[in-house]
Image (cartoon, rainbow, N blue to C red; front, top):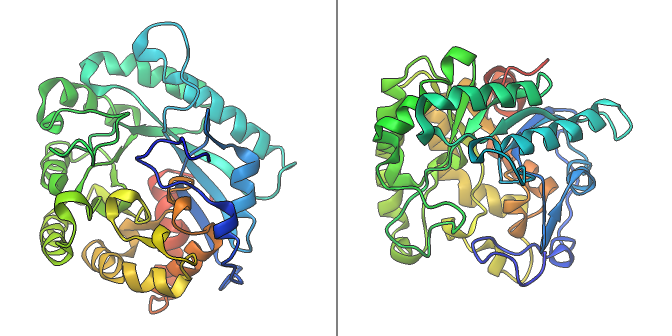
Length: 344
């Protein structure tokens, strides 16, 4: 990743990451990584060989789920249908993996694509096109709704309106998911968690997973406010936990917006350092939702600017050290398999 890469992301420095290696803890434990991306951008390429270089670091990654990232949209055709190109691309990668030629990991066994839900009921046709393109692997969509009044916090690629989760057109599109058996990945910032709670209550039959422990912010106006952010985040998460149709992804805390500063250290962080920094957020989430509604996720390559893949999974295993065997199975594979309806 070059220095010209989007400033919203922390640049990946392979030479820096290489200075921290750890043997995999509990290497036989099956892991489903339910959140990663693939893309080929002018200043950042992360395709199947790059993903495999990360997943082949000693941990037992049995399957993965791809999540939308604006990769390989169609260049022509109706605007609403152009994101179907991403599903076509990822299904091709999944087919490569399914050949067995690239190892035992079932890469992209689940696919989460994108549909602009603000097109309302017309979203049904686009969803059906994704299902057809997905070759039996398409599981749901993500429509990013992360919003903050500070434009520096916002990802410039996504500019949703503040009230999008309440809008009639968005909800008309959202209503098309459950009848097709499809799920919704929610990505927003922690002040917006109550908006998601309202949406989950309005659509109790729709399976929802909140990405990245709800997006706690730690930069700009939130810098130096960690305790206050945590209190507000925890209260909102406790209310969201009353919605049985919602699960949580445990990860995504290596992003610029979290303000944890791992990338600023002279040496890449160890799994002990990561586990210590994340413990309040991860333990609180598991305590509120239970292991059967939580799943560890890598969010690679976005989080790769802050730490290595193998070190990340060691940190997760240390955070789950006090869990029962059944709870560990849920956190590392079972919840993801059930939510995304993957093969065992």
